Image 1 (cartoon, rainbow, N blue to C red):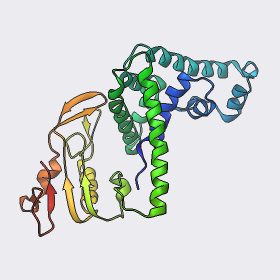
Image 2: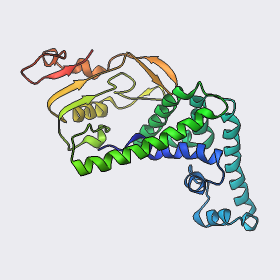
Image 3: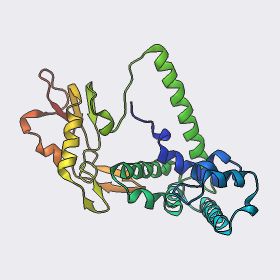
Image 4: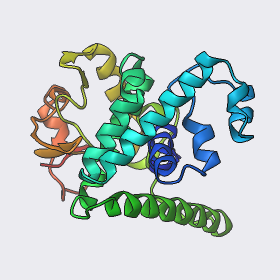
Length: 264
């Protein structure tokens, strides 16, 4: 089963910046983010920080630590004047997370996309002002994580069937009776990075992996409109859909022979 949204490292890191900003005594959050992205602040230094022994650190190290806390202060100021979705964007840019993930490979790019989804999710809190939106987001994220744990434990006890949500990469080697592939839009699948197209053949092979996970029925879908990183976009269907022979496509509702299902 795929990693749940709020359990992903990049989401935890982003939310940790918010929690540390609101509560400087949250040592677990400080520990998590003080050296991410890398700032050259090691565990030994962290121990001295928590012990209130910063004065005995080298001047260069104290500058690095002060720079980190200046980031938190800048986020704090933003929290009181900006919308929650804009605050997420600010955190990712100001902390250096965006730059760190943008320069990485496919896995890092996927992590950045997940943070963009967090900014989109945060739109629902934009109507709350003076930091209340951020507090509500953190509260709901905590409740969602707790609820997921309870559901997982209950499912293990009762061995119930459940929908499994995962990336195409994570699905390799697995098979399911019914598979839904969402987000089949140009720019999303096949993906587009910083205005430049990626290797479409590699993306096509990945699409083949997704298609062949289905044992009985496969549902392909795309959105005409999608909100990404807080911006509403108009999307064209993925070129991969048009690559499938017309005689293998049918609309929902037809029974009998197993075919690819194309949902308009």
